[in-house]
Image (cartoon, rainbow, N blue to C red):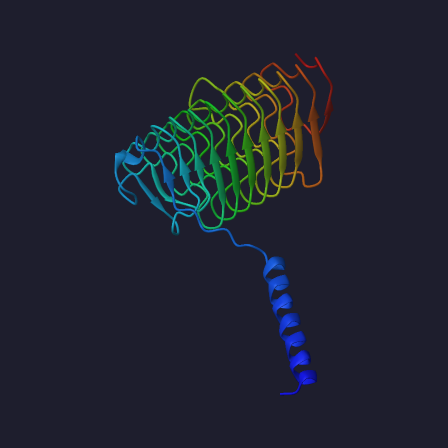
Length: 274
């Protein structure tokens, strides 16, 4: 090989090497899948999957804190990426199917401790975010955000049997603030709010009575309820429900009496209808 050819060959080789190096740098770095991270005091203290905890797929990026999922059947079929805090999901099927089937589920500390509480929450492509000390009663928050819905529940909320069932289920949106939807019996307070393509926004310390705010913003309606409002039997029931495109707005400290605001479509201000 003459000097000219050798020089050209060396130049081409160097250029190719630089191109490969550049391509390597520019290629996105794929993070390694993380296996389940489960505290030793959770899932019965046994290697998973087991009768306490199992996974919808391979359990990638599932995290479970201390003293959680310690009842048989409590956390079966969890979706990838599910997060469960400490002292949570300690009852039969309390968090089964959480975030499964392409969904997303996140539960903070001290929550979902009730029989079938939070069952199927965030499953089927939906999203469920549950705060500290919430959904601690049988059936509370069951199916929240199921089937492409988006449900967020604050701290200290939905702590009565059957409260907040199916909120945001079916492509709906539901946001429940702190200390809300806490009835005193099997009342279904705030059930179905924001379900079936609807939108529901419930403030702080609101809807704390039997049937209060049930179905608010259901079936394509749009409901917004302020702070410390609708705290009485049937108050705000079906606000903007079954009224596609219609809006119900209730301000702060309003509608705190039986039957008031029921099936309301329109606007109620602050400190009204008490």
